[in-house]
Image 1 (cartoon, rainbow, N blue to C red):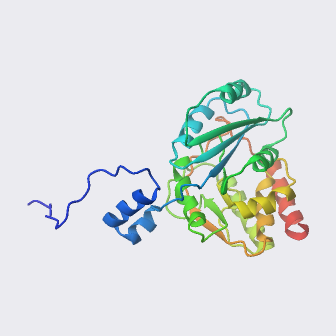
Image 2: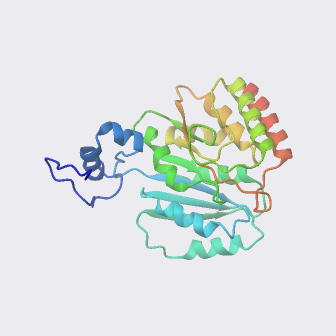
Image 3: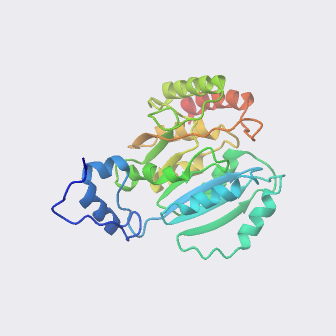
Length: 285
C-alpha cells in the first residue's frame, strides 16, 4: 500500500533563499508551520546582524583548520577573532599565514591576535572580547569538542529579543554526549551547584565553553573581567548575575569531549581556582 498522499498544493522541492533570511524563514514556515520552526531553530536573522566568534587558541595545530572551516560554514554573517596564546606546536605559524591570507569570504571577517607570552584561556577571551564589534558574541574552543553547527540554535533567543545571555549546557536535554571522566563530571556538577548558590541562578553547566552574550552584556562585563585561566568561567557567570535585568537562558548542546592524550588541558589546579573564583566574585564582584 502506498503511503503517498495527494496534496491540494504544490510543495517546493528546493529552498533557494539564503539560510536565516526573511525569505528562507517565510518559505519554511509556510511548509512546516510556526510551531515546528520554533522547535527546529528555524527563524530569520536581520540582514545587518553581525555575530562575533571569539576563539582562544593554544597548541591546537591539529584541530584548528577543521574547526575554522566548521565555524565559517555557519550561515550567519560573522567576525571570527582568533587569539593565539603563545602556542608552541606550530599553531602560531599557521595563524600568521591566516593573518595574511585573502579569504574572499563576504560572510566571514577573520582577524588574528597574538599574545607575546602564554597567559591562559581567560586572558585570550578578554583580549578577544575587547576587539569584537558584533551584535552578539560567542566563545568557541578550537579543540572540536563543541559543534559550531549548533550556534544558530543558541543564537535564536537573543535574535528574537528573549534573552541577553545563552549558555549551551552539556548536561541538559538529549544531545549526544561522549562518555568520559566521572570525576570531571562530578567536579563540574559541584562547581555549578556552588556557583548557583552564590549567583542565585539555576544553571546545569556553569563551566561550558558555549556562552553567548548580546552587545549590552559584553560592554558591561568585559572591562570588569580579571581572570587569566579557566577561572574566567565562574567569573563571567558571577558578573552577569549582577547585571540589572539580565535574562539568562540555557539550551542543550552536544559534546565530543577529548582525553588528556588528545590534548585536554584543564586539571585539578583549575578546579581549585574555579572554587576560589566562585566565592571571590560571588561575594565581592
